[in-house]
Amino acid sequence: MNNPALQTVTVALGQRSYPVWIGSGLLADHARWRAMLRGRHALVISNTTVAPLYLPRIEAGLDGLKWSSFLLDDGEAHKSFANVGRALEALGQLGATRDACVIALGGGVVGDLAGFSAACWMRGIDFIQMPTTLLAMVDSSVGGKTGVNLPVGKNLAGAFHQPRAVIADIDTLATLPEREYRAGLAEVIKGAAIGDEPFFAWLEQHADALAARDPATVLEAIARKVRYKAGVVARDETEQGERALLNLGHTFGHALETAGHYTTLLHGEGVAIGMLLAAQLSERQGMSGGADTLRLRQLLEKLGLPTTIPSGMEAQQLLALMRLDKKNTAGVLRLILWRGIGRAEIVAGVAEADVLAVLQAATEP
Image (cartoon, rainbow, N blue to C red; front, top):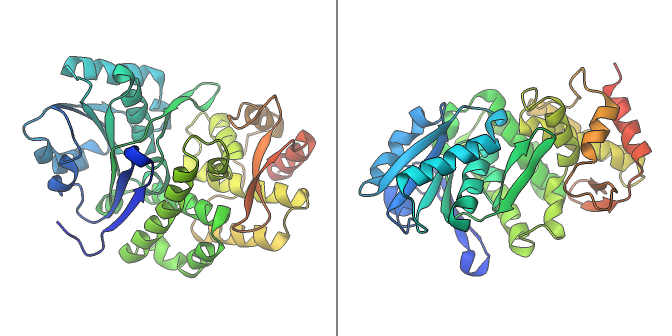
């Protein structure tokens, strides 16, 4: 099926380069993605919400293979080592060999866990991302970051393991709950906030169409964000420098998610609040002005995203969780801050007192 709206973005990593296809009807376009499977075995990892809706669309494309499915319960709390173990058991029961493929059909939780399981099985087998949420389409499915959560923090166990392909079928967004859809928009905003001020202005201009899920506008937003991220990943695959910028808002956001036991906030909601906190901290550091912070707040609010820390979370607790962030070195906080929209940078040695002050101001009743 050659849909006229199809967009193709290539993540350029030499011999490990892969396509990101974005369009309508792609799950049922079996000829396109079946060609990416090299062996006789496939394990589809999905969840109990997504599988009934979309697994039937890909089953015909698995005809002739020995395949099975492994379903998680829905939610961030299920991105755990226990479920990685179950996924590996499923690969074992399938008799999966080194040319097997794991197919991730779902959102970011499914994609992260499926990719990590594929990285572990026989020290690394193929996997294909079939993201069904906006957040997964624009962020977690692209770039090869995989992992699981631990009680002490989010994504602290993981591996870089690039997929063979990403199939982003925007038709799946029709069944995405409104809250999940809006959470995905936070990651779209994040890419523009980091390094693309014209895209940020485009988002401001098209906020109403995005909120209404206009297909052409959504497709354009996804493609622009994926192109931006693909360029960063190609230049810095394992996050030695520039790729760390993609974590704008994440040090704060992951702490918020962890404090809420992965049930209070969706990932995109944590990123939305985290980006605003990072902007406020940038202001406090004298790096940026209030006008940029206001533009960010207004865009987040226009798209229905949270901008305040949930009640019951304490500033000291959040700071303690931030100390566990993977970007920190030698016990010193490294944060992604900005000098205004489109000009993010890595800042080391931010005084904890300043971070605490921003958190306290945001958690005061």
